[in-house]
Image (cartoon, rainbow, N blue to C red; front, side, top):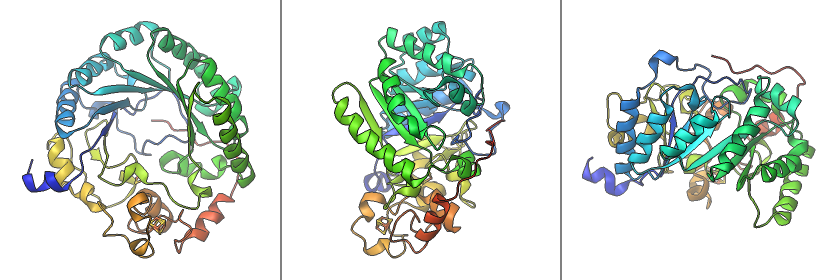
Length: 362
Ligand code: SF4
Ligand code: FES
């Protein structure tokens, strides 16, 4: 690690470890790229163990074992044990399908600290339809019960879109009934598969306003019983989110095949050069790789960000969204009401199509 680089750079806090892109579910808003990594390209457990040690040395505190479905890997328990041995706080992000009671117990013995289960809807038929997998809802509920029985903290992640936005209250009630300590009302972000399905997923302005009001009321009603995390969905916001806490500032994302990305959708920006953990240490990648340095800081931002007092708060928004909507990854995120392209966002937010989903499949 070069001394000049480390003093100037922030240290990452979180590592998203995408162990595999394989997943039994086919959610139409999956954040994985459209071109999924095949099984034969996946990093082996020994390489993940090295990556976790390097991450801890770099300052990372938390690792999110994700996918796809991380339990699609036969060696997920061994991988979990190596993350724990590296001193990282471990979070398993799971669809709930493929994690049996026995496997969960083995993961707990290996050092599992926290589980996040995704839920597609509070109504079983709708939930299974959205997941593209019959029986998913029942298996998720069973896993959540097993997690709580083992006294492992549980977060329910409810991805919100037009088909389920009317049931935000039911989803929070369900998370409480399941024994979760936290529920994320996570509006769909339009990258990857969700971008393909945007018009089928996009809620109306009226639905969004009602959901925002519902969350405020639910927070008051359930204060002290469950933490409710929610943000206004991008296309209906006035200012963008500080995506990934700022490019190359807080987190790293390692793909199943070993490429290291500044965010999960970074591969959607053409001409970025990503380095792999197969060829470089994580510290080298963090400090010197072209992709991590492409949009670090705020110097590259155009007007109106350059003179805006929010530029150290939101870093001009999301680079992937700026590219998806303007063709220029350096542009102000068009979600911002000050962006010259903001009208385009309003136009897209008003486009709704009642058509079947294009499911995410390998
Ligand atoms: Fe953020 Fe740029 Fe909009 Fe200011 S102009 S709020 S820095 S995106
Ligand atoms: Fe890539 Fe926001 S998803 S910067």
